[in-house]
Structures are given as C-alpha cells and as structure tokens.
Image 1 (cartoon, helix red, strand yellow):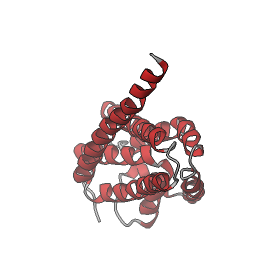
Image 2: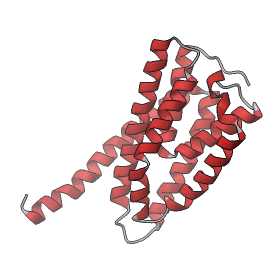
Image 3: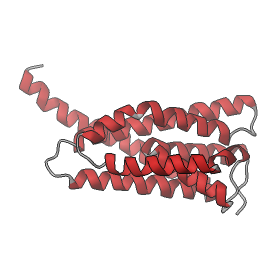
Length: 198
C-alpha cells in the first residue's frame, strides 16, 4: 500500500506514532520496523532504518521486558519514571527521520511536535498509573497496561494507513487522558490536604 508523503500526512503520522510511543516506545518502533522490513505499507524513506535486524531484535526483547515490568504494581511506576528519558527522545528521533524529506524548518517542527506529544502522553500515563497502582488488586493495573500495549501497536499500524484518522484519535484520547489524570490527582490531593491540614 502506498502512503501519500505530503507534509500534512507525515505530520499526522508523527502525531499518532508519537502518542503511541508515549504509551510504549518499543511496541511502536517494533511495529514500524516490521512494516518497513516487510514493505507491507510504504513508509517515509527516513524510517527504512527501523527495519534493520538489530533494531527489530532489540525492540522485541525490550517490548517483552516492558510487557512484564509494566504489569507489576509499584515497579511499573519506577519503570515509567525511568522511561521519561527513553520514550520522549526516541519519539523525537522517529519524528525527525519520518519528516526527513520535508524542509529543514518543517522537520524541526515535526520533531518538536513528536517530542511534545510523546511527553504529554507519557506524563498522562504516569499520572494515571500513580492513581491505579495503590489499588489492592492487580487486575486494574494489568488491564490498563494491556490496553496501552494494544493501543500502541494498533494505532501505529492504523496511522500508516489512515494518518489523519489516527492523529485525530490520538489527540482526542490524549486530551481525555490529561483531563482524567488531572481530576484523579485532584481527587487524591484534596483528602490529603485535609488530613495533613495543608
């Protein structure tokens, strides 16, 4: 399948892929890498390097590690905080390469957008995890983590076929996640303030 590499389509692809990267960077890069390797769908030429064997192997191993680590209550919080320095820079790098055929100015804008979307997604995910993790049962944590994995893979694949729809979904879900995280954090913060007289 051929994808139109217009600036608008590439920007939409960057937004959707960066959102997915903020959830699970390894699943996102692995999905793009497999698509690049198999030529199932034509990706922007700058993403061809994601199809290299070593990239696929490293991402597959790390995806397996994250699949387990992200479902362990409490440890998942440590894992997510540490991945602030992984998800955002790699998402920016993917955005940079995806927009390689655009003008230098547009490429820098796309890179900034990719980093910003990934950071906002990652921060919202971490905030929601901070609320879910203290719950006594592990089911909600596992369900949330599994949903993130499915969304990361599904949205990345969908973005290579319908970039505008995927980007719209990413923006709507991101806004909803930010609002939900804010409401939940306030709900926790207010009782604590009353308890400690703050």
